[in-house]
Length: 125
Image 1 (cartoon, rainbow, N blue to C red):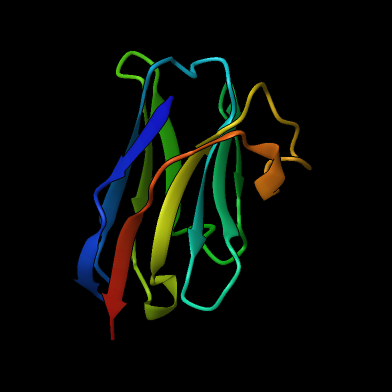
Image 2: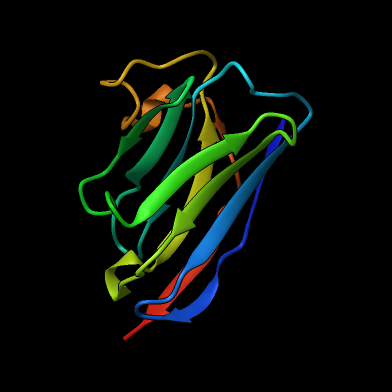
């Protein structure tokens, strides 16, 4: 199973990007999926999760600017990122759990069994 993340790039502060994550090898329509990010020298941190039937979780730092969504027909997870800031600069990873997560589990790295290779997002000031 592989999770292929794409859509990163170099943008200016205030710009938008949309990340996509496409699993190969199986579908995750019934599983929780999420986005994490890792900046140089920092630990991987939670960004957003799509847990089940529209139940969403966001980190405080991105709430109101980022939107997570999924298209089960296309087997694709998205992260729409608006009003990007330099502090959003990181490698962004998509992840999938082995089942359905509850809200308290969604921000935890160890709750996810499958990870993509990451896509770089760089926001200049």
